[in-house]
Length: 134
Image (cartoon, rainbow, N blue to C red; front, side, top):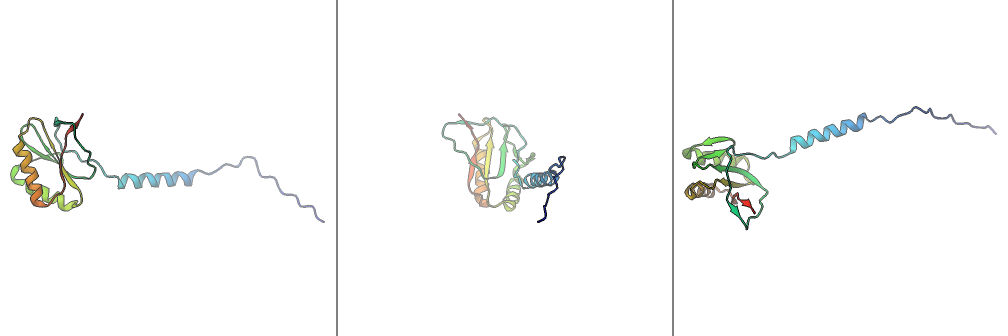
């Protein structure tokens, strides 16, 4: 019988981590591209305090109303005459998302109601008003 001897493996072998790093970077790029980013209205508002507020996750359209009753969408001031056109465009881009109105404490209820009425005419559902939760 022959005596088979196996060669001992060299002591300096290491694990190559390059393929694992490639996978991690590909996953990172995938998550960055597919992440939904929060849209900001473009004006800072002081919200109304409420005790019975419920959180709403699916925001498609965000409209802010400043203390001077100005409308802000996507960091741009929108005139009253162009409000319906802008809301229709945003609704056509994302028909599944609802709308959130961020109204300042000092804004008139008429301006908030006008935005809600236009949203109802377009077919945006649901329409929520953002408040500070105690």
